[in-house]
Structure formats: C-alpha cells, structure tokens
Image (cartoon, rainbow, N blue to C red; front, top):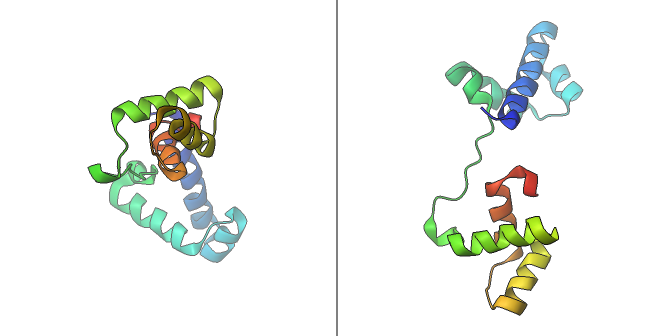
Length: 119
C-alpha cells in the first residue's frame, strides 16, 4: 500500500472516529469541511469493505477510445518531467512540434492517472 492510500485511510478514519466520539455528523462535517454525502459515502464504504474501502479509487478511463496511446503518454510524461510543462503547454507543444493532437484535458488525464507527483 502506497503512502497516498495510507493518508486517505488515516484522514477518513479520523473523520469517522470524530463523528463517533462527538455523536454529531453535522458538527463533524463542518469541522472537517466536508459534505454530509461525502461523510456517509465514506461510512458506507468503511462498513462494507473496512479500511480498504476508504482508499480513493478514481480509476483511469477504461474506454480505450478515451485513452491516449502509450506512445503519446510517454511523450507527455517526458515533457512534464524534463521541462515541467503544464497540460496546456504540453498540448500546444505536441501539436506544434510533433503534429499530435491531444487536448489539455487529455494531457491532464494522463498526468493524473500516471502519478499524483506529476500534477
């Protein structure tokens, strides 16, 4: 389990335990600045799957039509790690110099799915 997953579990357990301790969901949500729906989603996930249910699981798109090819992903990651370009500049660079059309959102999606360290 990576450190991001551990942070997710620790934070969400802290929120859930605070609610149990104070016996007031509204106060807990205000204290931690989260929506009640978020609190109850975390609670349902914890009751259903335990601590593993508290790990953020926003998957990358499974639809291959929405995915950028591996070759383009590597170019996007290279531009980010080497030149520290943002998604908009990466998109512009790919179009201007390599004649590759990838939207700013597509570049952001690649960076987000690859590693949170790249964003």
